[in-house]
Image 1 (cartoon, rainbow, N blue to C red):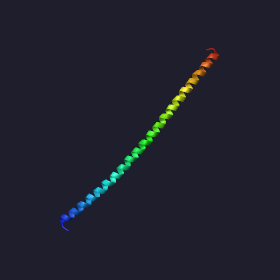
Image 2: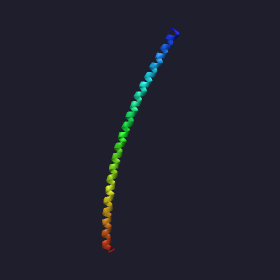
Image 3: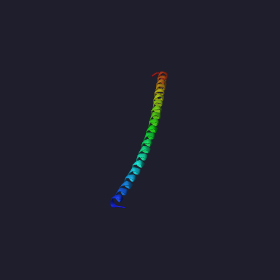
Image 4: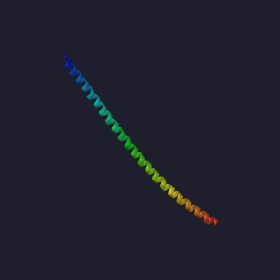
Length: 81
């Protein structure tokens, strides 16, 4: 085998190695993107749930406030204030 043939063989091997490495990176990158998308979907769902819970709590606070105002008004009328 001549020097040129040896060099071409080594070059072909190096290119094949780089192609395998790139393919592996592409698969890893795609998996990472899918993982990030999944985490994003989970976080969006958790945020929606938290917003719903906040809305429910705000409504309860308004209800309790109204009831307390009513009770305070009744106490004032009973006490003659």
